[in-house]
Image (cartoon, rainbow, N blue to C red; front, side, top):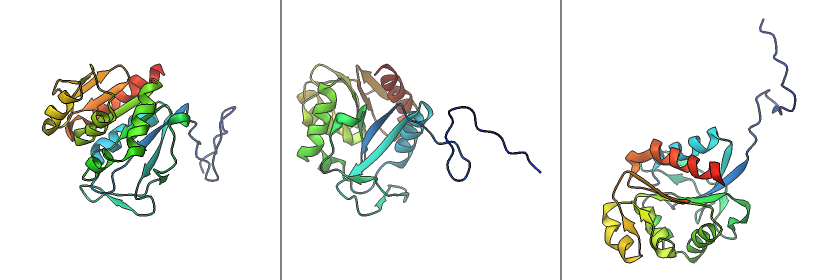
Length: 194
């Protein structure tokens, strides 16, 4: 019979004897209403988790299960309405079919502006980079994103690089889903200095 391991001093365990993860900060994850990019989201969240940074997900569709592009299902933690960047170390905008609608939502744009103004992580990939452009926070920054956004990003004052992952200060952008692991690593580099 296996001997039970005594918890280390200061270690919290749940009712099943599993170690309770303690977070040094939390990143707000803004989800589109449908068709989110599962792979990159998984890489981003697990990379942050590995450095003890939690995530809280919100969406305009907070009472419904959101379907991913490859049929993953996701239930967000709460509604987008009423969220403030004050309690978070940054914000991450998730790519997906509804991400261009997010770029039209005043509450979403306010979150991006507030995070950037406070020097917090502000990240997006694929077509969700449109949120950052519409928020007006990209002037003079090097960014990447879906190639279809190249002209819009340049009109927003950004220097479009087209590389896989681009970090400029606390703004992290990725071209598409193929950047997942590198995108997660760049997020970690930013939250580590905050």
